[in-house]
Image (cartoon, rainbow, N blue to C red):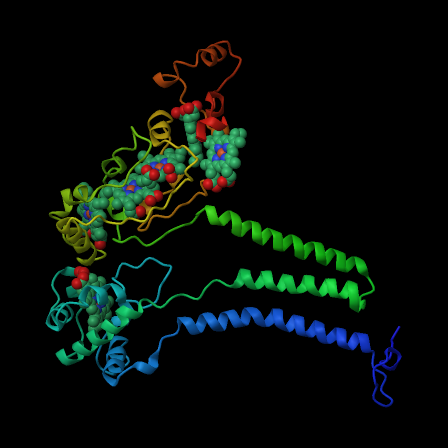
Length: 397
Ligand code: HEC
Ligand code: HEC
Ligand code: HEC
Ligand code: HEC
Ligand code: HEC
Ligand code: HEC
């Protein structure tokens, strides 16, 4: 099977007989594989570089401010340094302390004296606990402010992009390319069925990855964004026994549960000005928004597409379904997380399984035929499906 280069008309070199087609085929193969393997590496490097900071422009004062902030200079902190509590990276986990960007932003246009006062002469319970044991003089705090002013422009350091799936996708692509080359040109592997199995497997996996990505675009299970104010359901519902309906006061009689307006928060926070976990920083944001008349821009978490109709009143008041059935244990969350995918299958499955509170419920008086069937013993229970819960038009406009 081995054909020498001479046989193909290429000038060979003396006695070495090289399998010419295979050699150039291998080169192409190696090149293609190299290309595919290197591509993700390049992406990572590029992402890294764009995320990196431009240390070169640092003046000595700025550099010292940064080192002070992170506690890299001996003897300045007995316990934590600023950077240990006021984090400078974007993080996934919930953290009560204001992050470095928040404090930088707040004090950017304020005087150095004001900043020095906040750091060195703390007021309030939380500040007196956290802002002690600093061995800093005023000049050093000024340098820290200088660093923070610079940091404000730069923003929190971004996390690295999730490239694992892209990497996997590209590797599968490389495998597929190799199989095609092998079948058409290289013809080295004897057992062709292995290639067939590999091909179908790799292609199937790629399609699966694409489908997952496509579906995830419209859905947000596990979505858990940081809110503009660290409002905690745990603190309000579990610790302070406030009823869901006190804040989400439209939930019983309207389509939407609604997010409470700032005035409602102020019923209590006109008095309560310091929280156990966050100190004054978060409640101050609330009070400032109220005094300036700025709306608080809560980030919406649960969000059905526009073509779907969903009513809270229908489920909570008529269906007597508890909030936690659909929203999970909100009362134990410091930061709200969506626990279901809100897909059509989720709605339909529940409508098939859930018995409605059919009796002693005025809403169902109109279903005479069903009432008769139950009385005659033909059916034992009535599900949401039987009162129309799986008809397209009930949920779709
Ligand atoms: C003191 C007022 C208050 C109380 C009490 C309260 N909430 Fe909330 N709730 C809010 C605020 C403010 C938001 C918006 C900020 C956030 O998402 O944390 C919110 C958000 C939510 C969200 C997410 C909304 C979205 O954007 O999708 C759900 C779900 C929710 N609350 C359910 C509940 C349930 C269930 C209870 C009772 C266990 C409850 N809430 C009690 C004030 C309250
Ligand atoms: C019915 C009274 C009441 C209402 C209404 C209320 N809160 Fe509170 N809030 C409290 C109490 C009590 C605390 C706990 C104070 C403490 O920890 O000592 C608190 C604490 C907080 C904290 C600090 C949490 C901590 O422990 O650090 C924030 C932030 C907050 N509330 C924001 C809000 C917002 C925003 C609203 C409106 C959506 C709101 N609150 C509505 C009573 C209320
Ligand atoms: C042990 C943790 C901890 C350390 C260390 C710490 N802080 Fe704080 N800092 C906090 C907390 C918590 C708050 C919010 C308390 C409050 O608002 O009542 C805060 C608040 C602040 C504020 C005021 C924010 C506002 O709302 O006005 C500034 C400014 C600040 N810190 C700067 C610094 C600097 C600079 C350092 C280092 C010299 C530092 N912090 C070290 C925990 C810490
Ligand atoms: C049958 C499931 C179900 C139950 C029970 C339920 N919710 Fe919801 N909730 C949803 C869905 C679905 C959405 C998204 C609605 C949309 O995007 O139109 C939502 C959205 C919300 C929102 C965001 C704002 C809004 O109105 O769209 C809040 C707040 C909320 N629910 C609170 C509650 C509270 C409080 C209860 C209990 C009294 C409750 N929910 C019971 C399914 C449910
Ligand atoms: C936890 C169970 C559960 C989930 C999840 C649920 N539902 Fe329901 N739904 C019910 C029950 C029970 C009823 C019947 C009570 C009633 O008709 O008032 C109902 C009734 C309805 C009705 C009225 C049907 C009629 O006959 O008028 C609509 C519309 C509806 N649901 C839409 C939705 C949509 C859209 C979703 C998903 C986003 C959803 N539901 C998720 C339990 C659920
Ligand atoms: C109980 C409520 C409910 C019923 C009944 C229902 N749907 Fe849906 N449907 C939904 C929800 C919720 C979504 C949104 C899914 C999402 O956002 O991923 C949806 C999405 C869709 C979509 C868009 C595809 C998608 O995933 O976004 C189509 C098409 C659709 N439904 C068709 C139908 C047809 C046809 C029927 C009748 C056989 C029907 N639906 C009955 C709740 C329902």
